[in-house]
Length: 599
Image 1 (spheres, rainbow, N blue to C red):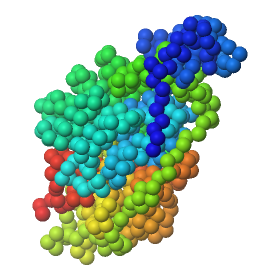
Image 2: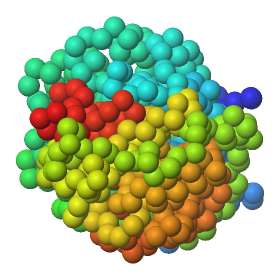
Image 3: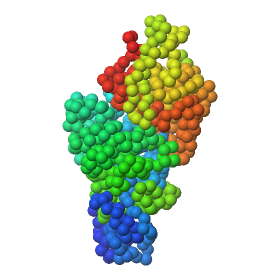
Image 4: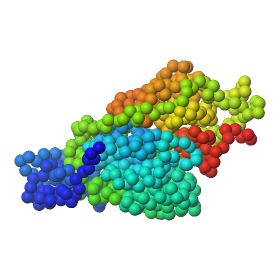
């Protein structure tokens, strides 16, 4: 396809100069606002912004010399003028939306730049899927930068993906116009041990002058961490405590602290700035990730900025963490992240810096949202059929596929159980004594069953284990083809028959999330594109997601955003215990372990 790229500063400099000097009229002037300067951390009253060709020509106390008969004048009326917000790390697919619909959802919240890693679709469709995400990103009215996925599979030998990403794929992608760097390097043991493939991917990125994303999910901050940093990753978002943030910043990394739908890692790490007094320019806010319900009901990066302020962060510092810090990290300080000459005219008008109401949003010099109402079109690609037909189980499942036989005629067993931790990505490796009836191990109390159903190669494979923390009661099951990062199918339930019904239903609709209770479907979110995304508007998807969450609550689940916890149970690069299509994985040692002790 023909790529749409934004005109460069040098290309537009002659026009910017003429407007700033008063020799030509601006296309737009924002008049009478408080200029929030994130370079100097100042809020300067009574300033105007003159804009032409999508970029800022000047920011001055009086831009009347830039106003001509055709100039659009926007009255700030004493409101704050802040840069458009940047999300430093995220996966669009986790919003259950295509890039176009995701952009449509976040523009009213003031997000004008996103740094996205489409490794979810890479696991399903390979380089072709990345290209589709990249191409749709480039035609949006805001800045959607793509990081080439680095790890598909995320942990080689621990899982089987639909496709694998090679070092050659990475080198090719570095030539694409919208690629900003390498996506999170999740195979942290591979980097620490000098794996040639991981080194080749990072070398291709660095040789292209682009940024290597990090993902160090281990609590070990000793030699393994030192080796990881030495390998080249420039940032990390897997920290969960103050010590994590400090360690990363001291080693020259950017500490990305996240507030997503289910991961609440800001409050525990921002104290490195608010209490320890470290340089805040080395900390970045990100979401990683928000599903459609959060986007529609709560917000996006604006939500993270508000939360940082509530945690005691100075509002101007919090804004830096979601604007200039992010831009600088990706080498785009001269393009985005501040309201200064030459930069893209991504501007938000807000009447309060603490509560941050998003009242008027401009992107590339054009108004894109007013009072929460989008004003522009977000164009779609024509997604091909092979991207919509990706659930291949190989057979119709029955309840017997989810039975777990007791070993050696035992009357009870001690099982290794995945323990869900509320509002955290890591799980706990737990143990539970479970009863046996008619030769089959029974889930009991808060322990229910989890299964990973292979859906890429139609093998008919089902791996069964146990999970706790959801609180489900009564005969039920929930299934999802969103199963980070291999994106097979995760089924969690208390009843084998319901588990089979849920799995087969997703094969029928081409992917998504469903919940069955007492043999009846209670909720369904169709995600026909790669089994990960819908091309319907965010409001429609969010309404279905809300119904799903209500059904989970009706089945006894009280966890905050439990669906996000469900979708990460196969993520074999975050400790402690996960499930894959190859078995139960202890991520502390990257070894497979049996379901039962002493077997």
